Each structure stands twice: as structure tokens, then as C-alpha cells.
Amino acid sequence: MGVCGVLIYCADHTCSHSISIMADRFADEVRLSDLEPRLLCSACGNRGADVRPSFNWHPKGPIGGMGYR
Image 1 (cartoon, rainbow, N blue to C red):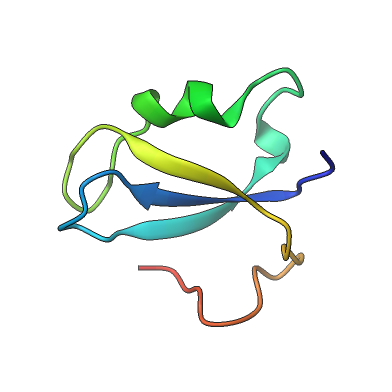
Image 2: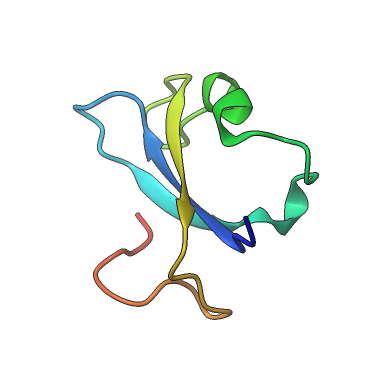
């Protein structure tokens, strides 16, 4: 799909931890839905995440209100 970055949100709605990372570390055949149950939140320790493509990705990170927590 030409996605360079992904947005990752903790699956625990009370945590709200999120991060943006570069997607080039994953092989082309990896689906985002395959990654979701394997991710571990660094803030609360819960397993599971909501992973979405970031179409507004720029080399210095996404533009706008999305930040790192």
C-alpha cells in the first residue's frame, strides 16, 4: 500500500497510550492485523493493540496533534 509509518494504540481503552513508528521494519507480506495481538504496551503492560497505517507519515514523524507518550 506504500505505507511508510503505522500508528499503534493500546488495546486497553483506559490506557490510551499511542506511538508512531516506521513500517519498513516489517516484511511486505506481514499484515497489520497479524501484529496486533503480539504487541505489548510499554505504559500499562497489556498485550494487544490497534495498529493502523499512517498515510501522513513524514521522515521526522507525523504532522499534527499526534505525539509520543
